[in-house]
Length: 153
Image (cartoon, rainbow, N blue to C red; front, side, top):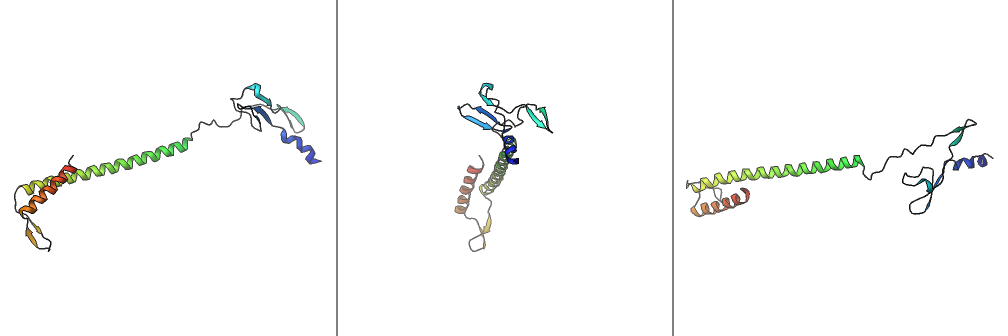
């Protein structure tokens, strides 16, 4: 008997309307604001029972959040990740620029020393100290000019 008495209460707050596509929609939530009043076929009554007494229930708009298609928290995290990635790229580019500037400065000073004609000595293939020959000097000058050409732009 209790089930028979409780059955009508299940449909107490049912809404029925016709959506933009012409389909009937049943819900326990109010239709969206875009549905005109003439398309609302059934809505819950404004009266209810409380403690054996009939009371007037206020009809209010549903307090569902407005959906804009964008999650502000997700957008903020995405923006932060993009900013971090841009900062890393900029840092790497700055380090590369700094390294090129240092290489350029070293190459120019080495070129100046090599072109001065000062006799230079250094280790040879056997690990012995030997003076730089004119052909080795010319090859080294060409190598350093190549470095200057790439790093000193």
